[in-house]
Image (cartoon, rainbow, N blue to C red; front, top):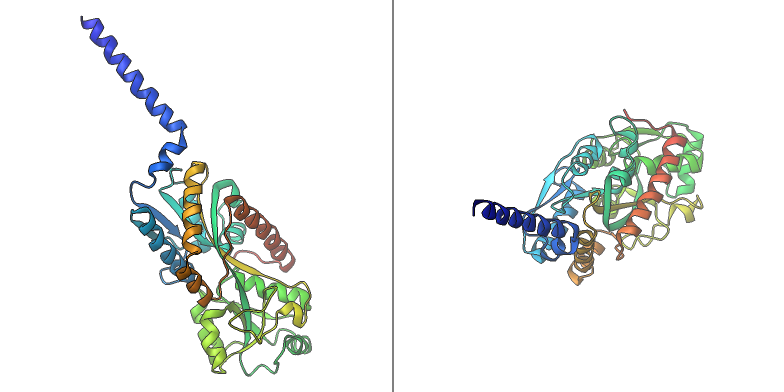
Length: 332
């Protein structure tokens, strides 16, 4: 009798283990119920930063759709690398996600990674790109140029006399300036700041001459004349600045730089969980409310798959690598 009970217990244990194994090998089972607990959305942006604001807008809607709390976890440091590495080392169960601007997953991984360049696609799984946006080149009114061509002429006549500010070494704003320097064959003095707000303050005060930046933060100053918009970095004019030409059309054919934001996850997260987050985020961003919000921020959005987002990351990585090498940009 004793051995019979032992055998029954062993059989029960084996059955439980088999069931657990089947569930572990069947990702659809987990995804059908996902999420059943709090989801952490890590971002390398500081609280109140552009990526943080976008993460909270989308996070609120995802929380409502999933019926589970979504916690925004700000982990700034090393221009996004602290957040990247923390996410990569988290369990691949879908309960830790990452929200980053493009420069944090393509540029910072080359400049700020500890132990050499860090290929994002080897450590993180792209889920969905949630935005694409272009920048505007603005000048203080003291700069004697009203067009990109005039600016190039002034810069060539006075090498390194003009400065351009950015939110930091390796930021998209920095890369836009370096790409401009390479294309126009001019010398501009780069002054990196710790974030965009102080850089914009100094630009408005006349302590700097030029800046490449997102449109919303400087739009009021363009409209009241405290800053002058010379060109935009996209392939088409910005709807909030319809009278401002693209830099490519104005003077430098082929010039283009695009920013982005997206959601990623630890590598090897079950495919159907990735697709569930992708599908729900697509639905949210296609809603009239979010379309209006994105339009107000001069941000574009097109539905996309994880594979399309991965291809965009790879293309941006390759392009930024070329710019970094050509401009000789290194981590400080």
